[in-house]
Length: 292
Image (cartoon, rainbow, N blue to C red):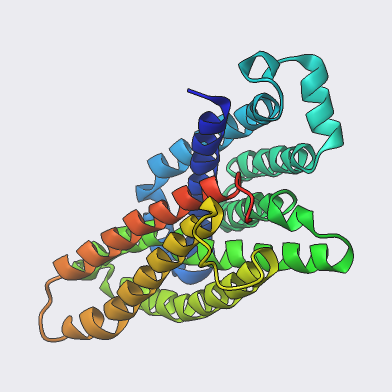
C-alpha cells in the first residue's frame, strides 16, 4: 500500500468517526429529551468507544502519513527531520496540532458526568470537524478570502455532520416508537430532528455551492480532471440523499399513521447512512487532489 492510499483510508476513518461523534452528540445533547438521550447514549456506547479509539489512532497516524506522502515514501514517515518540517512548516502540520488538541478535549469530555458529558462531547466533536478547515483547499486562498473559505467550510462540515452523523441515533430511535414507554419521547425527538434536518440540508446545499465556486469557479463539468469528476459524483450522491430525506419526511412518516410498519423507514435511513459513508469516501480522496 502506498502512503497516498494509506492517507486516504486514514482520512476516511477520521472523517467518519468525527462526523458520527459530532452528529450523535448533538442529537443526544440538544434534540433528544433527557431520558431518551440517556437511553440512546447507552445503546450507542460501543459506537462511541470505537469512534473515540479511531480518532486517537487516526490522529496519531496522520502526521507520519503526511510526512510519507510529502516526502520520499515510507522511509520519511518517521524521519525526525521530515516530521519536524511538516509539523512546523505546513498548514497540514498546523491542522494536526489543533486536531490532536481537539481529540484530547473529546477524550477528556468522555470522563465528565451527566448532561455536562453530553455537551462536552458535542462541543469537542464539533471542534474536531472545524480543525479540518485549517488545511485543505481553503489554504490555497489568502487574506480575507481564506477566512471566508474556512468559515464556509466550517458551516458545511457542521451542518453536514448534524445531518449524516445523527442518522445512526435516528436508526436507534425508530424502533423505540413501538415501545409505549418511549413512544412519546421518540416521536418528539424525530420531529425535532426533522426540523433541524431541514436547516442542515439547506446549509449543506448553500455552503456546497459556495465551496464549489471558491475552488472550481464554475460547475464541475471538466471531467478530464479527477477532482471535478469525483466532485460531480459527490454532488449526485448528495442529491440522492436529499431525495431520500424528503421521501422519508413527507412520504414514509405520514404513512405511519395508517400503517405502523417501520421497515420502509428503517431501510431508507440505512440507505442514507451507506450513501453518507460514500460521500465521506469521496471527500477523503478530493482533499488529496488538485481541482484543475
